[in-house]
Image (tube, rainbow, N blue to C red):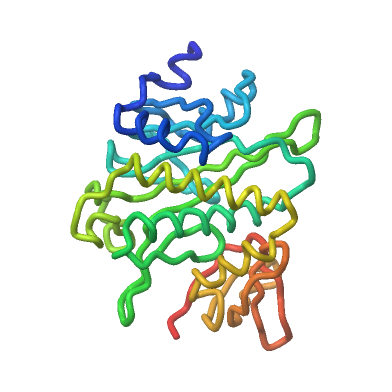
Amino acid sequence: MNARATIGTRTAPPADLASALEAARHDLDPYGRDIRYFESVGSTMDVARRLATQGAGDGLVVVADRQTAGRGRRGRRWFSPDRAGLYVSLLLEPLEAPIEPGLITLGAGVALAEAIRAVVPAVPVCVKWPNDLVVEPPGGARRKLGGILAEGLAVNGRLTRIILGFGINVQDGAPPPELAAHVTSLESLSGGPVDRATLLVHVLIRLRGVTGALGAGRAADVLARWERLSPSSHGRRVAWSTAAGSRRGTTAGVDPDGALAVDTAEGRERIVSADLRWLSP
């Protein structure tokens, strides 16, 4: 299989996206220096990783209209219908000091949620630990709007960069039956059209600010913003499985490394990577 077939068919960014990126160039830098736009790819994460290993520089942003093998946390399939969402991966700047991938994920959640609230103020998007964008209507069922995935890129055994991917449901896109009751979109919630180019620019600007804050040692500020956007991070009952059996507790915020704190009958525990089950009140 040749490189072009592996990566996908690259095309020029649509005029509206190119114009929006150019207008915000100063606020975006370094993101947007190198935009790779594709009509269809397997996964923007895989494309970004391949381009990084081929020498792509800082600021690489991979955008696709459609993913045929999009993935989320723990390898779960990410439903990515044509032109119905934002499917993006970017290469973060070289890390001068190690940053916990969990902090990158939570920081990205802050950037995405704040961008959505700015562009589509009618949608009260929240973040749910560790990587989900959701809406939680009073008395209604929680529904997912988007997700985030951060993967390390190592050189000679040393983590040097992070590939950050995200997907946001802009339109409904006819999800399969098993997902229909659990997902929603910006347009269905707002009742009007949402411009993908404008939303992407707002997301990238905020990502620049969040990653800069993390790199400058201001993780506490980012985590405080995350908790304000996450009603489920305090006082919600959760369960998870361990080698010793099932565990239960109540959420109690996040710690300085981005782990979820949970109060149990035996004391407070740190949840780093468990697959949580969110229980009814």
